[in-house]
Length: 138
Image (cartoon, rainbow, N blue to C red; front, side):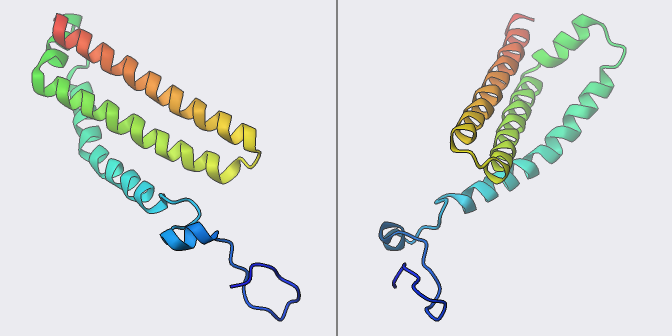
């Protein structure tokens, strides 16, 4: 198919490169998997958020030792870690879509994507460290 448009009478313009046509990939290469991973983390977060809110409500008025004991229980520590990982992964994917959709300056787009990845990874690691420290030292 000709990608040059001389007049309006010619057919539609093909924007995929020959390599993309050969691989049968669209413009972004991974849009479908990104969509499904974002939905999967959202579904995973539904019961985790319910558990998290229930745990927080049960700890209202509790002393520090009780809170530490609750977090230090193996299943609670595992669920807290799963909640943290799913939350920051979901947030990273959502913010990535926002940057891709609304930032059109090349260098700013790249910078913001790196900032999103760095902030989400740093916050997740700090949260996981806090959970591990409480769970292992309590």
